[in-house]
Each structure stands twice: as C-alpha cells, then as structure tokens.
Image 1 (cartoon, helix red, strand yellow):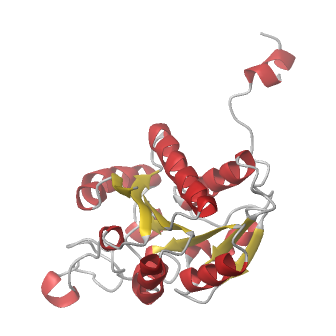
Image 2 (tube, helix red, strand yellow):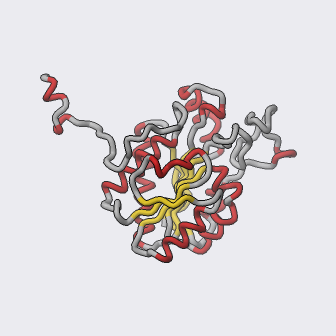
Length: 253
C-alpha cells in the first residue's frame, strides 16, 4: 500500500477530536483523565452541542479541564460544581450542562452539594472520576480509598475502625428519586472506553431531555498516587477496585 493510501480518509481509524485543544495535558502517564477528556470532546462534537454546552471544572487534578476541551467553562470552588451547574442549567435550560469531578471533590468536600443537586433532580450530567486517592495534593486518603489501601495519610493502610468504610457514593445517589441514570464505568480497555462513551452520551441526552440528574462514575487509576507503573495500576484496579466498585448500571430509567 502506498503512503498516500495509508493516510487517506478511507483508511483512517482515529483522528484527534476537533474540540480537543493542542495544549499538552498535565496528567501523569497512565492517568485516566486524558481518555475521559477525549471521550467528552468527541461526544460534544458528534452530538452537535458545541454551542450549547457548559462544563463546570472542579478543584483537583482536573482543575485545568478548560485548557483541553474547547467549550464554555466555569470554574467552581472545591466541591461546589453541582451547585454551580444547577444555577447554570436553571438559567439556561436549553444548554447541556455537566460537571467534571474527582472523588475528593465530589465525595468529600462536595458531598452535600452532590447529594442535594441529585435529590432535586437537577437536569445536569455529573462525570465522576474515582481513583480512590487525592492525586493532586499529595496522595492522601480519599473517602473512596479502599480498606487496607496505603496512602500518604494511611501509610499502613486504611483502617475501618479509624478511618471508616470506603464511600460508595454512586450507590447512595442511585437511591435518590431525582437521579435518572447512575452508572459505573472505566476506560482501561478499548471495550471499556466504548461502554463509558455510551454512558456519557446517555447522560448528555438526559440533560437535554430534562429527565433529571445523571451520574457517570469512571473508576480510574492514579499511577503517581498509587506508586505504580501504568500497567501495574490497571492490573491493581481490576483486582482491587472493581470488586468493591463493580462496573455497570446502578440505575437507568
């Protein structure tokens, strides 16, 4: 096959999403955030929502999300993204509004905002990346840190008697009448990426249709915080994270 044939549109298997900027991402090698960013950029473009989308960026590893996806963004205080998103959606009901949050942002300092926005059934999509650790601030224990998992603040492993149980926040959100979709996915394999993309598409469709709050949890890795290589992180996630945070729909109305 000639070089010009290899790069012809007919033979193209992948291209950079149009809404993904040329800015080099700051994420560590093996981090799940970059893959999720790509999915979101692809979906907004494919769904024709570029001019109708408002993303709410958090505090945490994804604080610079506005540098990477070329849409309208609002920066929220730590944990307050669902509250900001609620206001934006109520003032602009024709927009597709989503938050992008980590486990520390959503399930720790933002627990109240998350639960009450979901309980009200705000017509927003919440994208929640759960890597069971505070990645940006030094690898401390998060609410989702597993029992026995070592972090900067639990060097001998998380103890239930001292630190409590890992918080399954998505399971809690699935019990609320205001949620229409609560699903747990991952992006560690091509098949998983396709399933995660389908779940996020459904969440975006729900936002536009006014069906209530959609929550897509992405069980991800943190190679730096876990002190592992990217390959080791994926294997550790499969062996330890998935049994406690099983993938699949928790609620899909």
